[in-house]
Length: 191
Image 1: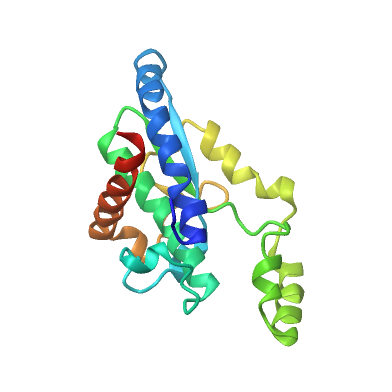
Image 2: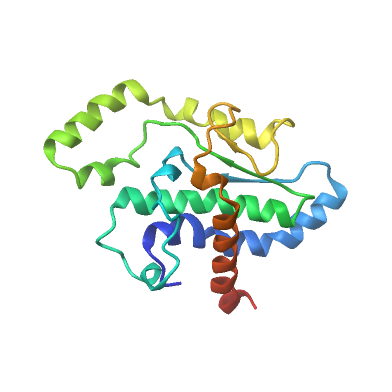
């Protein structure tokens, strides 16, 4: 789609699949009581740009002048907003987003490799005390995917905790802007 890599991978890559699955999800909701889609976001959605998104011509570029953390935050904010926009338009399906927690995976390797030695060493040291193993890191995903108490349009932190959304995540205007941008981009591929 020619989109900035973080946004393309975390949001635009998932949007067409979700759209293509919607008819099946809607049909299933007529014969099953609990149909849900879980969006994997992150607490780092709060590191998105203060205006929310770069939904202009820059989105079609690598944006080398913007930090990786900011671009990652933008993509994770998009997961929350797209989830909420879908839930609003499809109330028969539960759309839920989660922050999985800080699990000990190699995901942070690229982020740390771009840091200087001191920052990288400090991050590695801090991660020893703030991360959980991969098994424990899966708990929130499993809770949201299986617990009847999980509610649509809600962002859950480990395990089943709500109310930690950033102001950006709560912004309905940004949610609608993202929806409109995504629909416009998908139109050329799905219609």
